[in-house]
Length: 198
Image (cartoon, rainbow, N blue to C red):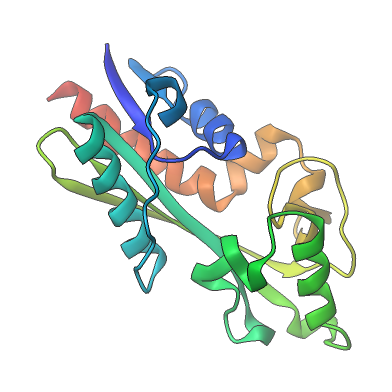
């Protein structure tokens, strides 16, 4: 069985990608399970560039089929920030402090101007070093306060009006169906299925 190396140590991402790719004849592995520890500098100016940088680095280090993603939150009222700097926005770790900061930065901003989106770019580098790409977007609004215990990152403050819930309040099945990572993951699944047939 061919192995797919996920270019991340983020347990939330590993869990979601493993669920999305379930059923493919692939062994999905994380860097830690191979004893691989890379510090890849994300020097790209876009999610797509950063994903490609990571996928290439992990493929080169392992020789395996490699999948990387770069994702983040774009807030309209903040001029698209945190954007590509979502993971290291204002030097804060993912979680409560970063979510509170975004809410504070939108203090006084009315509901109709709290638009935001999750964006993810996935890059797959196959054994022949060919690059394949997928993109996923989920539109929403920044919540007035964090809600929900599920998910990770900005999920507790990412409100989806259509469902009346933050992403952190959604069951994993719903989140995977509508999320940016779920959409891009289904695209990646199709690409991987074709690669496995070749």
